[in-house]
Length: 382
Image (cartoon, rainbow, N blue to C red; front, top):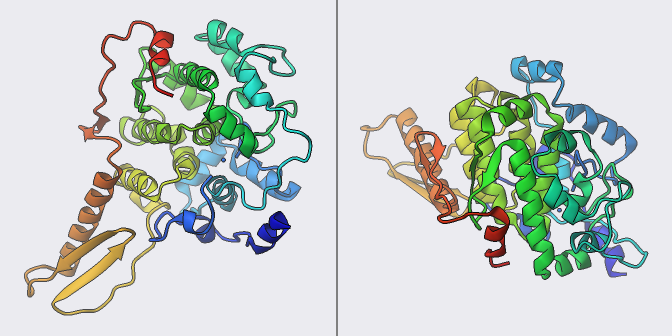
């Protein structure tokens, strides 16, 4: 009865604005408990076939026509499919019904090396010990990603089982499963040309970054894998690992120009896997400063209503409160708005506190004395 009433109260969002509370003052958790989506791509099984087709078309990041259209159109719009999909993930899939069959914890048992992934019959230890650096296998095998990075929804590999809330709790309390999950994450990072630096999830370019970034820029189907990986990190207890990875990818796409084909996916999908408003705002403000052409940046905050006032004006933005006191006619309206925006940007970035930028690059601390990656991960308190 409780589930029935919960389903009855849930109102399906019908616009991008209803799906995206990034720039609102209230926390999303006030409406629903925060919570995980996708298969390779992120298409939810709860969507209608028509929605799925439209979503697949929007997810076709590999199409040159898609990229040209997105960059040249003067009427670029946010994808409702993407916004709705990530809204459901961030809100723990409202209206989701747990499977009725007994929970077999197949994802956890796979990570404990008790069962192989299906249909290939490969155990997790074989992947962790033999697949690292085998880029051909990682690129062309399409059945392992759903097992390595499980979600609370069905993916393309129908042999893989969706996570359940009970299994998530059990997984997060099992040290061996989390250790192997982190190793799987480092294998995929290496495949993308990235390395994990520390237990906080900080990342940087790997030694092989040039070749791997060139490949990643030209194989956009891997952007769907990145979306899945980000979501799975959040489901299995590594939410804090998302921000450093998304920031690095945005920096490479917008500042360094090494991943230009990724920028739309990073802004439309990767950013919105983060559950904290302040982190999404900081990422989007960083992106807005570097996006070209600036008039095509469609993820900006909504325009604030101008409130006429004399003496002082107070504008509230989320939990940050920016106060501007006008001094006679010494400051022009344009100058005041620019200062206000810069002040809000600085406050959001200080609040997130997850990275420092210097000359357009992240200042990350290398792990000292690390000889072997697996040995290092053993030392991470899980």
